[in-house]
Amino acid sequence: MYGKQTECAIAATSRLAEVYDEGRTRLNAQEIAEGRGLQAPFVAKILTSLSMAGIVKGSRGPGGGYTLARHPKNIKLRDVFQIFERENDNANCPFGGGVCGGGNPCPLHDSLVEIQRDMDTFLDSTSFDTFRAAYQERGFRPAPSGTKPKVAKRESYRARKPGTKRG
Image (cartoon, rainbow, N blue to C red; front, side, top):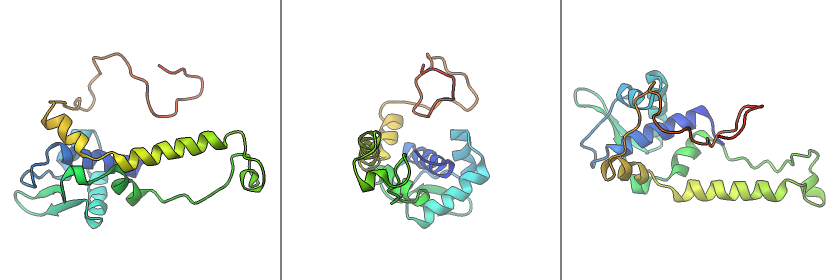
């Protein structure tokens, strides 16, 4: 669905959304990395890209760090996603040879179109305010990096490894 840079960017932006208070609270790359179990140099690189795109604002020096450039309700997942993922205009069919474009659609066509439509809806309609509200209003806190969950294992949205069954 998306790559490591996008995953890190969503994690960093969501952490900044959690503490959003009109820009008074600023977090540096190390603090964001620790809060999300990521590598600080990678987070710093991602924050630079997010800053150039106008998603975050950074300041140097004592009391410096990063904050969101606007309220999290005005930042959609798509805003972050499109910085790191290129739009795929490729109409190639999984059957190969342009089957869908040259005749009847392949057996997967309708399912793939539906998945893409759902992903587009999700990216376009989900704002980072979800993270702010969960953290500030409902008291949700991410588990510290490296801790074992105390809940039953959840089904993952990631593709499972060959030979494993869904949870």
